[in-house]
Every structure is written in C-alpha cells, then in structure tokens.
Length: 231
Image (cartoon, rainbow, N blue to C red; front, side):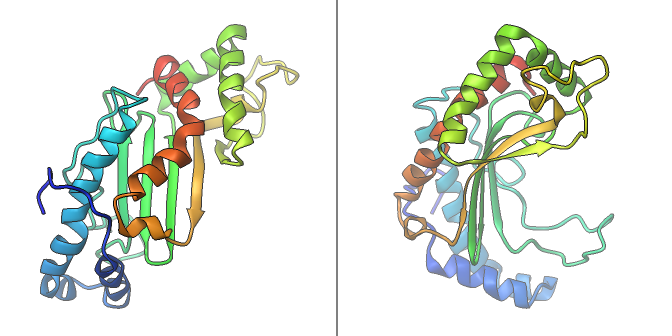
C-alpha cells in the first residue's frame, strides 16, 4: 500500500502489533517485527491521512494532510532524553491534520489509535506566548468574543469535552464578570469529540466518515481559531 492507495481501514493486525509492542517495548523486538509495522500500521496510516484530508477539505479547504512521518503521522519512536519513561516506542498511532503555518501551534484535528481506545479531538492543544496574547485579545473583544461563544454552542450541544482551562483567574485588568471570563482562563482550546473503545468503523473505509461526523460540531471553533489566533 502506498501513500496514494485507497484507505480500507486499519486491519486487526495493526492492533495486534501495538499489543505485542506494549509487552515487548524494545528495539530488538521492533526491528524483528518492522515488516509488520510497515505493512499493518504505517501503510494504512499514509492512506488514512490522505483520505481524511480529502474528506475534511469539504469544509476546511486549507487543512494540511501530509502523509509522512513527523508531519501528519507522529513518529512511533519516543524521545526519552527528558522522560522518566525510557520505553523506546509509543504503543499508539497518532495523527494531526492542521490549518496554519506551524503544525505545532496551529489548530487541527487529532486522531489517536491504541489497542483499547480511540481518541478524536480538535482545536489547539496549547498557545505559544504570541498566540495566547492574540487569543486573549480576541476573547476580550465584544464581537469576536461573542462569535467564539456562538461557535462553542454546537460543541456543548454535542457533549464534547472542552479542555485547556489552566489559569485560576482571568488576566490582570480583566473584569471577573466579563462574559468570556471562563474562556480567558485557557492556555489552549481543544475538544474531545470521541474517546472510547475502537469502533467497528476502524476496520474499514467508513472510519474517515466516522471521524468527520464526530468533529463537525467543532468546525466553527476551528475556523475562529484559524482566523483570530492562527499558528
């Protein structure tokens, strides 16, 4: 399967590989089973990114879907230099499709696949200093702040979990009764659209539509972040 191949889902062998890796998280094991990883995990991942990008562009035409490792596909190798966990490999597959110049700070769609769980999310995980200043300025603006609150309504109606509220109080000089006081507590704004056991759709081409349907309620927030915060 190549990067432009048709996406037909992630085979059960992909989850089997991740399960085995979690029990044998060593470089010798990985090298001995590299062929399985490339066939059952990496090749479907490339086709998946391409297919999901094509689907999302119906509503988000500038979304970046780059089917390469370290672009939309997170590398499996872990950076253990500053971590107490010295396992050399992650035991999940991770994907990020974003809209903006910088993948690390731009809003986007995140998909996480592990043996017993799939996570689908959207938004910006954390704002850098300049982005945080832009976010706060936009939230404090009566028109832009109201637009974000309106964009949040479908998110709340869909029951999506909202994350990123870190600060205990709004920025200095902000009235605690400000209508967006709660949003001004955020150092990032991201939402979980799905977090549960892997759905049956994971194993076939409908996984792309499954993800699309889950993240649709967050598109308004995504667009607001792109227009007012960027990345």
